Length: 137
Image (cartoon, one colour):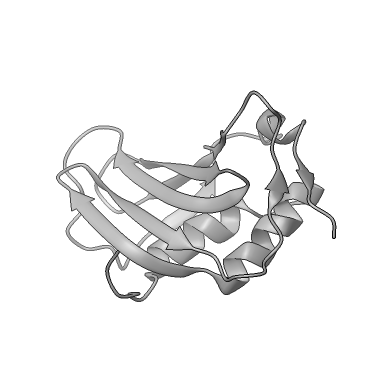
């Protein structure tokens, strides 16, 4: 992996909105986020992938036996003059791993400085967290 790079305001806003909430698993993800570094960013013509590494010793989530990945997918990003941008936050093996941002239609915006983020629905679809628990000890 490459040297850590700065987490952008866009990436920070989307991840922080995705892991907000009262569910105990989200609290663990916030602990992970507080120690996370961005180790790789890959920009495509239609979005980007940001790969994170959490700090050693940070609590992880206990995943159900039949699942390795959880996806949090309810944050939309809006930029002036383009269609909304979708997001997928991947939690692999109980650890915050990759943020994927993608255009729903059209090219990836050139200016990433002006945006707003929101949930695409209420209540939030957090069913994927139903069988997940914080690891103790």
